[in-house]
Image (cartoon, rainbow, N blue to C red; front, side, top):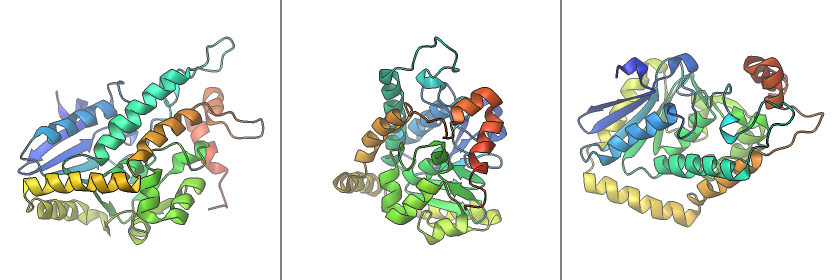
Length: 293
């Protein structure tokens, strides 16, 4: 299959594997497990790296103008069985919501977080929603100084919930900064992300590739057994700190959120998408925050 047809591209050079999200025309937006899109393609590629004894480091990056702009808002919600709002449609079941979210948060996010290889997120352009979750699940992260990073998807109504990485975000940047990102949907650039500890380094965009490669090459100097044991030891530490429990908490809370009820005076993206289209619904969501950021 030609690279342009692949949702994720896998490349290996020596001890370093690179997985590139390859939906540049959609800013590398995501679907869900089982939909034969970016999610399945990425975790299939990650499996190749996990099984290759020569691979020590996996660099994760995006093609085009963004690392990832989050989930595709044209399709989000439908996998649960959410309908179009027409009379007589059956309500989406809790069991389907739970099944989808468990496969997604425990089967995907937790898997990346505990990947036996060292993972580096290479961040440029937009890193929103699922993008920042991927960043948090990687061991290390380097961002372009002009990258835009945030949990803007929280403005759909999550109010600081609905993701298995909240524990990781709090542990990474502290409670108050985490709540600022979550409750306000604040976007920050790469420089600010470095300042608060969300990424390890921020560099000019034209130096991003070189900086990430230098970091990866330094890690390849470590022995294979050392990397494997180090990752296993860190999992024990993560378990003791309650970080890994967040993925279980997250899938249950995300399922509860997908059953959220909006009152008449509250903004409902799904209703706006149905009545006015995705683009209008998306922009209207954020226009409400004008003058408040």
